[in-house]
Image 1 (cartoon, one colour):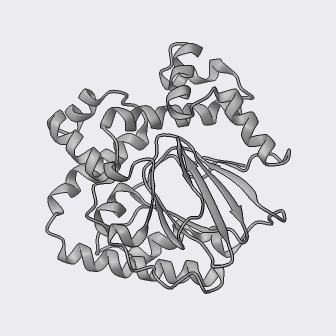
Image 2: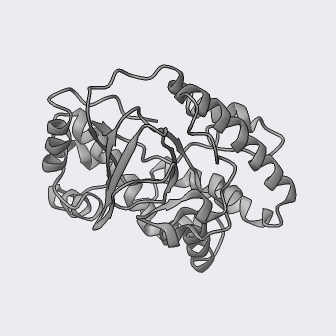
Length: 284
């Protein structure tokens, strides 16, 4: 199963200031949870491509193990935070599917004071990041877990927005999210210039709330978009030129950086783990 959760949630999809409907925005991001897809019996291997952080809410009857780079997690806690990632996150799920809630950098800034870079390519218990609002949810049915998670996250975000003394970062977090999503800037110096800030300040914001330096974020976004096109065009290397890749070697270097293997091998591995079933549509 190949899932593309790479793009940061757009401004419209991310958690918003208290004047907007935080709960409505959260609902729109996990509305598919009310209609779970059929799953084969037994453990299922799932790959999550590198991207922004996410919450995993794991039902009590489900066991989930994970691997990121050379880190192996034999059993994830009931409420786990997958930090920002620069390599695929391999999950082995045995039981009902966990509920996954993407966390944009803006979400991160309102849920925890932990520097995102310290959790990069790691999985952490939510409580270890000071996130306790989701405790006690996993005993319920999956749909009930999703609804309760929406309400609790919305309440926490609104409360912290009102009390936050860090509002000065908002003007940079939101534009940087948008700039990354647009996918037209590939270097940190140009990004800093467009955001009217210094390269040093941009790097500070990126590491604190996004988990990686600006250059890595921009390269990751470009590569994942190109990989999606590569898959859609049946592995045609010419298709990635539209994303600023000069040739196949250029694309393959980024593949080694963000996949640890070639695109063909990664896609073949994912297809085989899905027992020959076609990959699902790319998640937006």
